[in-house]
Length: 219
Image 1 (cartoon, rainbow, N blue to C red):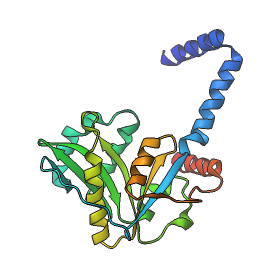
Image 2: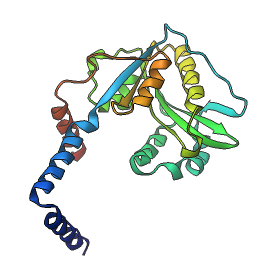
Image 3: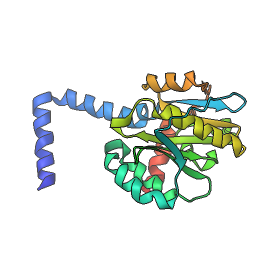
């Protein structure tokens, strides 16, 4: 019944919008998933430069452990919907070597998390079209990150320096992040803290990269 319903909906759309409009919508969909979806800006922060640690007595930032999973599911999972729903799978990696999760706790509730990978070659960065030759063995990676809607604002400004301080102490030389090239606010935020764009970071042949990713997922 659902297939028939979808067919009727598609036929009605063609009737109302016209065949040219339908082709245009299909073209835009394909362009998004093969190109625009993968348009990132990659930024790096070298630990040769300082980043000031900020403190707020009402906000506690810490590394999580398996003992925190219950509270994470209560406080954060209800907010992970839509594009953020896939973030839930990352929490299965708590306890894995090189995979760390930092949370911010406010008034007894977790309101933010940042995933940190001390080995960039085992991080999500490998799954996007980043030019691997630009990576170093001493690089680390931050992402994904998330703040619950009612707490967005300054929290990450306290979390990020804490992460940088930790990575510096464990021997990392540079930390990488990526943002959508449409997220100008995020780019400005990172650059004000000393992150700089990595030139020539995008892997050549993005379309072929996406096709390989789709084939690997299908396999």
